[in-house]
Image (cartoon, rainbow, N blue to C red; front, side, top):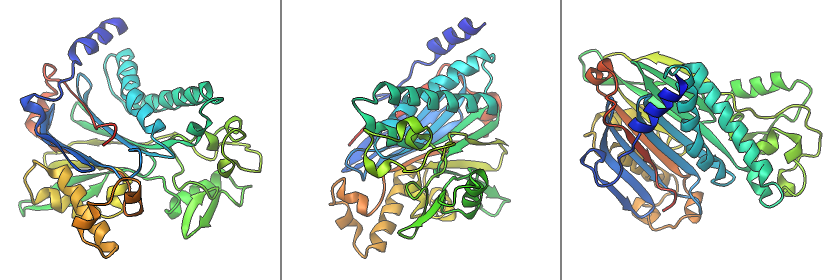
Length: 368
């Protein structure tokens, strides 16, 4: 049964990319890459990413086929390695694990895919420890959404976010409902969670330069990677001194355990906005939903990013046109890398199930 199902995946999962009518217009505007509109198994999508770092640390992907529809937003930090590794491996792990489970996606199969990805990245760091020890301090927030048989699963480690736009009655109004749980030390409940897990460590969360950080180093408490905060064997030379902690590590300071929610899609659920923290730093949930709801589907993701950039420019008392002239690396002083994927929900298609003869596989550009 396992081999038969894996053969099904290999036959059906032949991605179509550039040059087809269904993937929509793809383009670039300086550091902004976008795909204005395209079709996936349950409706239309819009996708965009803007780079701020010297090397793009965000990755994102859409996969639509036998497993329904999979969306991944991977917000890297400390370098691009963990986000790229996650984008390369997490969906593949989920496909293989689900094949073992008769092609069914559950919260358990998603959690196992997270853990296999974490284990794989840890092994990758171990293999390269003597030559590239710096990848031990690379990590990635990881937000995954899976639409499978009329159910949406949302799994998250870190502080990326997915927000649902839901129609309110017949008023034309749209409610903004956050579906993901965030793991950032700026949140009081996360600081409380960390203190409960580490009762004998008064330095488990430290306020540094006005920002709460785990061990005074990192803001998120869960991630893929960051193995120097999870295993003592990686918190030593040749890792750079600024990442090494003086006290012995008796237990991991961070985990890769996702918070998972399942939501039965309802007819008034209109669209989903998946985005890395760089967007939500400048836009509220309500503002993002209003922008999507008030405009055509095409260009939705690009429109959200531009709204965030306008806000980032306003905060620094500058014009958006001047912000656009600032190159990567220096741009990071104004905003982070931002990845956005908007899924519009066609409930006729969702109720019928994903069409297997039109699979889709799209990954955001590696760098710009």
